[in-house]
Image (cartoon, rainbow, N blue to C red; front, side, top):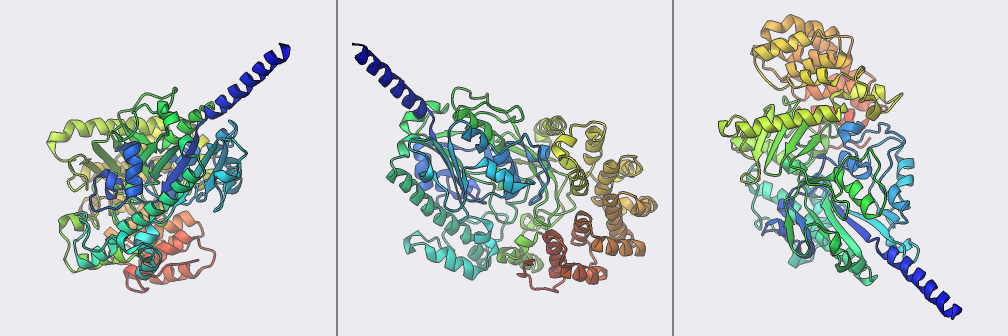
Amino acid sequence: MKNIAFLFLFLSVLFGCQKKELSKPNILWVTIEDSSPQFFGCYGDTDARTPVIDKLADEGVRFTNAFSTGTVCSPSRSTIITGVRTFKMGTGNHRSNYPIPEFIHGFPYYLQQQGYYVTNNAKTDYNVGNVKQFTKQAWNESSGKAGWWNRKPGQPFFAVFNYADSHQSRTMTMPYEWYRKNVYNKLPAADRIEEDDFEMPPFYNNSPEMRKQFVRVYNSIKLTDNKIGELLQKLEDDNLRDSTIVFFYADHGEGMPRGKTNGINFGYRVPFIIWFPEMYKHLSPWGTAGIVTDELIDFEDLAPTLISLAGGEIPDYLKGRVLLGKNRSEPVDHLILSSDRADNGIDMVRTITDGKYVYSRNFMPFMPEARYIRYMEIGDIKQVMRKELAEGKLNQLQKSLFEPRPAEFLFDIENDLWETKNLVDNPEYKVVLEKMRNQLDNKTLNARDVMFLPEYEIGLISKTETPYEFRMDKTRYPLIEIYAAASLSGKRGEEIAKQQISLLKDRNDVVRYWAAIGLRCQNQETLKPFQQEIITAMNDEYPPVAVTAAAISYQDFKSQDAENKLNEFIRTENPDIALMAVNYLLYLDNKEPFVESVKAVHEMPDRIYNVKAACVDVLGSLGLVPNNFQNRN
């Protein structure tokens, strides 16, 4: 009898342990690149051919209000892997490598502590300092061969598979012949979408040349859909489908002009689907099988959600929501999103959305939406757009992509999906506008957004400490004063200019920087009374102020001293100041006096890619290099 009792006890413990182990779901992340939801069948595009993804949505939960926290890959992935927004971490500028605090880990680290086998196949691009050590700590395996197949028997897994077939390189950047070989010809004939098989977004000219280029989006997504089908079949073949929750999403919006790198809905909103097997349907707060939810989510929510699913304790520094399971957080009614430098294209946009409206504050609106970024300029579609602009073939909406932006955008994306009508000056939307302005102010100040420092300053800080921690020092980083100056930038008129001229004498370097940026956004007539003050600012001891004042003085006052100083700044060894100088050249009327400096800098082997890329953009805009030239150094 004792033996029988012991046997029952042993079996109870055994099955209890197995039940506990089974209570932890396997998790598969299927991530794709550079894709907006409006090009998928399950999101209503009848021209799309995405049967695998559509079926996942039909059997799962489809999100209509899912947003990337950024508009280009490495900042987006920084938030995904750390769970911390880029404007807290200082990681908002594309392909930077600033340090982050040692206590912040890639979130799969916490899943490992709960017994998970975590794998990444294979993209990292995390935009943090010491990235090799960071990646090694985050993953059991991160490589092109990584997957669930190397775990211990019965061990729960978290596996990421990233598909690059919809990436901007496929849809626009690589030569058309490359696309035909590596995308179009990889599709069976029945899968191919042809040039007359889709509706063109209205902010692109509906010309044969543009259709030839834009069809690449549909075929690249179709190839992606086919490959995802193969992955899900492998999951099925390994008898794991019934124990695995599947997430599908894109890393940010569509990798085409006006999408990727731009702080509007087309840059932020992503397709997002969660599929639950029968045994884990109880974890879904929305229900399952064909559910559509308009709940607001963004990438800050992913890390805490996964840690919670794995049974771990969520670190205090993670402020996102838990979306699933018993620890689910309350929904929110708005989100803050951000867009900063992309490659050589300097910019700064902060955005608020409630799902119906998108409000974006452009802090550097003297640059257009279709600003110069070398990785885009080499694409045929961007060159077709510039050619058709020069030939007068574009309507006002299409031309506006090449004109200075307003300080603010407000779009009703429920009724204006393609963001064609800016409602900022429409009195009917005054209440909405004021509400979203206030939300942006509160979110920015409460988060202590460190990206209001110029990248030059972030670089200096990063030599001795992390921007994440620096931003919390209210004495060294008086954000209230800095944000007040930045909030004037983009607003135009004499009264605003007077305030900016006054701030140009402030004792704080960064306040003066934002005063100068704001003055760069003013028109020539407005600046005439302040010529002497701006010319004097060319000698400011803080380089970001001096280089900006030089750009204004050259453009608006035709100053010879400004020309000389800009040439000096172009050649400076500091990469952030050199990039500012060359970037300013791109939006000046007369670039000729700087050609020799630009050529010389481009040939210097020790200059970073972004500076060289901006140099090529200057030369390309003058017809001195082929438009499809890509600097490889």
